[in-house]
Image (cartoon, rainbow, N blue to C red; front, side, top):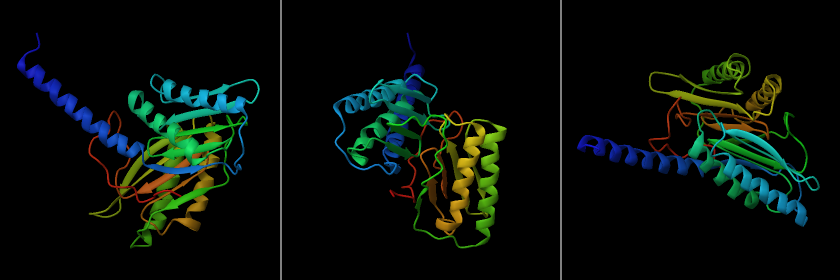
Length: 263
């Protein structure tokens, strides 16, 4: 029989898990960016719609038991190509919830479109009528800058150095096509960032994709405290709070609303 202490631990664990889930669900629903890949609205054929429904269902189901990433093709005629990717340590139920949320949003954000990409803080999904697996989509580049401006222009160079280090670590040191880190800007301010590529890319394809994003930052976002720059294949996100998870950490304390917002 479980003793009193064991029951208390079980109750506390369940409570913390509930808080983690509530925090995660709030962030997972905060869609950071979407793109319909320059496709126009059209009446989808019944075959394509059926295959699209099937691949979206597959994403939601498969994400529960995978390592956080997979891709698939459904249909020999009117084929649909799709992938999902949960960043970093987001796996299992949390990954599934994030993917299921994106799956629910994608057809609304890209209604009657053959292609869609949806990014948020924890995952990305993508589908298309064209085989994009292994191909780095470097354009068009989307960006969602925040509203607050930096107070010291010295941050611009520190930010660029930070990104270059992150890109190297994601594509050459860890070979995971993903990296998260932060730095102290001053005694009272810190900055945090994530770089991520979908895992169908090679290291070199990921590096090229992220380098293109970095070249876009001076044009759109370097004066901002928070921003996200992304394409269908890669993403860079920068903010003044730790919006990502640490290793072996489930979401816990609710984070502030992201500065970036929807495009």
